[in-house]
Image (tube, rainbow, N blue to C red; front, side, top):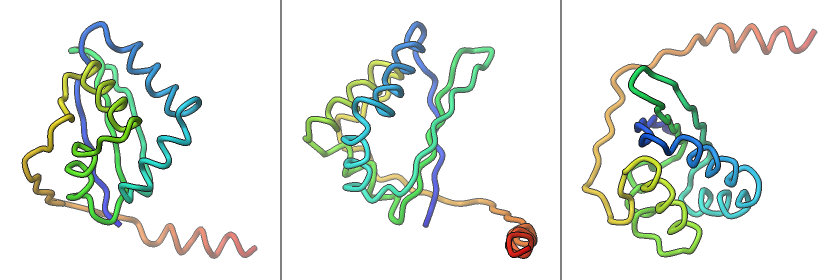
Length: 127
């Protein structure tokens, strides 16, 4: 399993529109979103909004086995939900996902996990 974090500024005046899109993904379009993620082999997502001096930034974290395949497959998808989501992303961030991107290279520079905490949690769970 691999993970990638993508960040993009939200265009001025589009913060509420982006929040509405996220709400739709959680409620009215949740099943379509889950189906799209499964089709793309995405196993987890997290989305954060960060308020910075320059404006709001959206951070998207994706978990998947083959991250290098997700963006090209999503960009090339002609499924109605995927087309809708790509339009929403472009309108709110300016990021154009309607065309297949250039090949992206992912390079993990550093990772650390406290493995002792996992062991301590498992030991305390048995008490």
